[in-house]
Image (cartoon, rainbow, N blue to C red):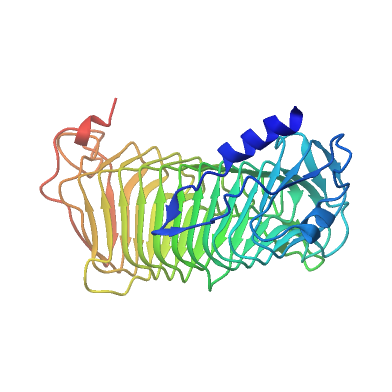
Length: 395
């Protein structure tokens, strides 16, 4: 009877799921060919790897709750599903420079596991993905080196990656990655003998066509999200906080990106852009930054390369800081209650039609006007300004 119930569960779980950029992430939907690991069945396997070795392409391997001490290679297109992500536990045994789950095949579904205790050594990883069209769902990764991706068309959703060296690391050749509805907290890295750190970011990526959606990213050692030399980046609906001494979001050398509908609070810098082109920041709340809510550096472009629109930027040491940059547009935002509303050095900025915390505009004159603008060899065009808060954001 238990196996009949399991067959029904597997059938429901492996109905083909949503695609990324028009391509199915995985296509394994077989329910007639299921192998079982653990549990009390007379023919059940005692190890996950032995079941994989015997499985044909497209098989489902169902793993009952328990603690499994092994390192697993997934080299076939299969569905690997645990009974419950809280009780189906893969223990890496803290062996040095190992990978607990290595996924080299394409079209793999992997869900409902806890992976723990894979933290010893620079190359130790919870999951390493080199295959394409991979679906990672409802997994817990803790006390590990994190997840490492070097592939295309990967979807990671509803996972918790916390208390690791890092959350997710994406290689520069990767593309079409979506990370959705995940929690990443206290990924603090490891200190080397030379004083430096391994890891320390929630998400780090150099890939293209990366989407990070509705994620909660708190208290990384360094950056919540760090993307370097990537392109076509979308960060939407994320809550990012507690990142000292660096940024909630760092984009370096990124081409084409949108940060929207995010809440960034209690970071050293909310968002930092360095030599990045065509970046839009819109509908975000950026508050309580110890240095700057938004920092833009070394754009060196003459066209509109960074647009900040419809944001609530308040209670930061500096609302927006612009250094050595041209073509910056800051319009229809609420910039108020910051020690300095905007600081610009060797830059040109169109900052018209913002609300500066007072109907009489910026300058902070004897408390009768709003946040001040501090310009050093810079041009900031701020007239006309808004006389009341934009979009009823200020309550």
